[in-house]
Structures are given as C-alpha cells and as structure tokens.
Image (cartoon, rainbow, N blue to C red; front, side, top):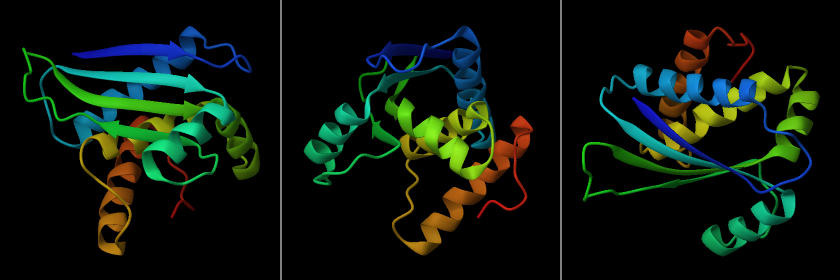
Length: 153
C-alpha cells in the first residue's frame, strides 16, 4: 500500500485526479521495479519556480531553479508504514520540459516522479556508475508503465 500526501503550493496549474493517478502509478511501479513490498508513504508538493529555487539554495547550496527535489527520510521509528520522504516538483518545469522534449505533460510528470522515488530509495547520479544504475532503474520503470522512449539516455 502506498500512502500519498499531496500539497499544492503553486497557482499555475490545477492538480487533477488524473495527475494524482499518474503519480500513484509511478510510485507503485518504482517500488515494484525495486523489488520492494510493504507499506510506504510519500509526501509530494507542487511548487512555483521561486519556491523550488529557495529550497534548492537552502538545502543544496545551488541558487538555481530546478525541476524536482527529493528529500529521503531515514525513518527509524516506523510503525508499519515506511516514510520514504518528500518530493517537491516545479510544475512550471514539468510543462516546459515536456514541450522541449516533445512528449506529454503526463509522461514528464511520471518520469520526474519515478526519478524522485529512486532518489528516495537511495540512488543518485553523481558518479557515472551510479548514474547508469539509476537510469537503468528509471528506464525499467518507464517501460513497465508503458511510457518509455527508445532514445532516452
């Protein structure tokens, strides 16, 4: 079971039930591809470019707008449901990146969710070998969801 807490702190885009469904499916698929079972909780916030820039600056020391931030939770006091962490998505970037890359908003939202969940599960893309491992997990998940693009790197 996945428990999802959504927080909409932006005004550019209406968050629909279809978007919530895409997010849930993306989280569930990521956990499935990782080979996990159990109960998990994820907090996801939709924010403006200004807010994500502030968060990026404060938590990562990078004073730039980004598409998504992930904050893994080390929940040693779990009571049956494991809190994976927090995901923060810049809705402006979801729209612009989907347009730039020539695919749908829904696909971009799914990919950013998948990308973030793998960060919450401990993956990163700083070193090349780690990047390859994380990208392989992302590709497997996107294939599982049926939204994989062959030219993805």
